[in-house]
Length: 167
Image 1: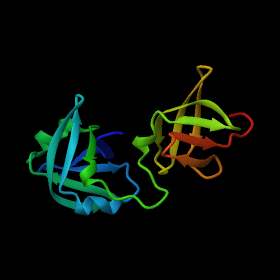
Image 2: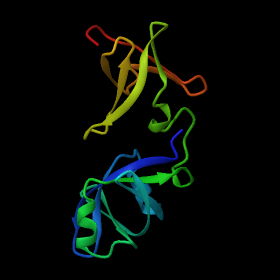
Image 3: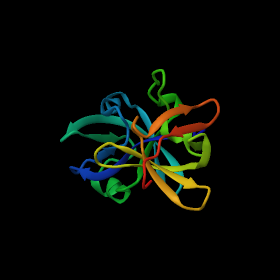
């Protein structure tokens, strides 16, 4: 289980006072309004930051951090990932799960293990695609939609999938 959950990627500086646009990687873009503490991953180290402002421009949150006061401070962080710890994560509804928690889960198709969840990709259309490392050494890309993901068993660490011809 991951200690930190990614909620966005620092995109580009906004103005000269250290604010930065965030490309959100969370389902709830409004979550940034209530975010007080987060972490920026810099060279594998989690650097704590305190959110002092939040506004939205073109459906992207623009955050200001207490630790970064001008454009020269924040500009080098373009592309860095923004995380929250579990204490600051949004609560889950029944049947929901954090994507980071299913990395390493067995992938089951037709009652047989075909591989494990190696990673996931989030595209610009807000669609999640699971990267499955198959037992035969190949990789499969499976969209996180009910047509393909039929069940996620958090207790047993299994993701049940329905594959179509050519997958």
